[in-house]
Image 1: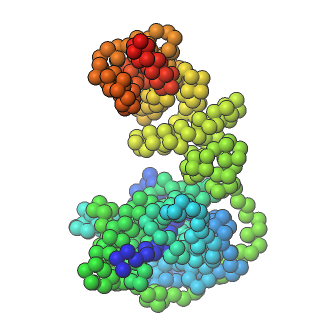
Image 2: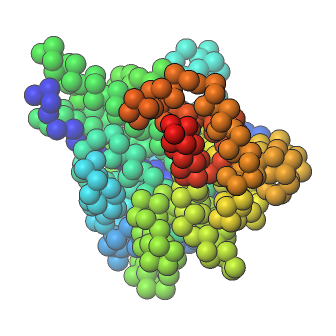
Image 3: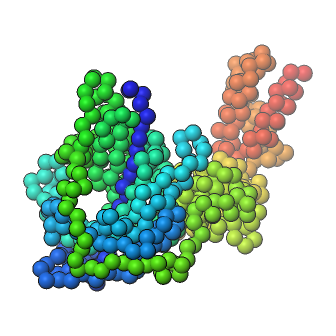
Length: 482
């Protein structure tokens, strides 16, 4: 039983990037303003107010439903979900219950076994976001909490999956794919605080289900589920019962903590929202066009640019990265496709992650300049990384960024050719300084050659072509034997 199958389902709450709230005209852009400055009697739920539906929000929701292969329901309906919480000012939330906007659908991800698999969806429904609690201290031991209602009423869609994911890693892949799709649609701002929140349901087959509430990051979902798998397995190992409950993820400690017993649907006392008429959207659906989505763009990158499937998947997994790649290889730089795919997906992505930089901060022309030097054989891969790091560090500091050619000249990073004497001189110096390694090579120890080549690369500061260096080293060593 300890090795029982892990079962994961997600409820993903995504803010739609509209300019006004779901039921009133208050602005949704409150990042640079003070608390409770973007509110009105409607989004505060004051008595006597009447909500009106934001058509753009519904159009965005339909876009998402179509992109995720859902069936849009001809008639959907808003309902009141009754419960009291400090950030829910009117003590009920306007949401959708038994008549959601869309049902069914799926998202394709790469499973843990490396094969593509479909994660089935249950439904997509539209609702309003509650306010935001600001804890004075921290959520666990804060002296008190304040409520900011700027977020109250921002349009949300809740995307509910079937329990089809089999590991925390698959859950994170699902979220990454969903985020990419929403960004391609232009309905979601992933950089806005609180724009995506996840409730994760997890169980070990044959045991009770546990819900983890309000996880606010993709990494957090994977970490919370990983902790919960371990916690539940430990309970079973000790002969204890996994209780059906709601838990919170404490990000600073990397643990989940019990919050309350799990509510049932009848606890919320849903009933149709009396102030809003049912939605009839069948005439809208056919008129809402979809852009090129991640899967289609991935296939195009494979066919048009001859990218490997793995590189195409990485490049198209983020809209900004896909756009950056196509900018780099546009026009007369089409011969850089293969090199650009490798360097963006592998090298540049790693360097940006290390510096916590976004790819939109990098000048595509400067990056293409680095690739041209590599393509022409002016610099080695190692020197290319050094040039790229200088470019990124100057970007990060806000300094005037040198051209790759200027950086190569200033740091003397041009490739050392075998026929100019410098490389041969470095090889002979390394051989003279490492007689033990030379003897090991003569004795047939292959690792000795790698050591000597590595030492020479250090002397040339990575400016030697590895293949040329290896061949010249072997020739020099053989010459010494005669």
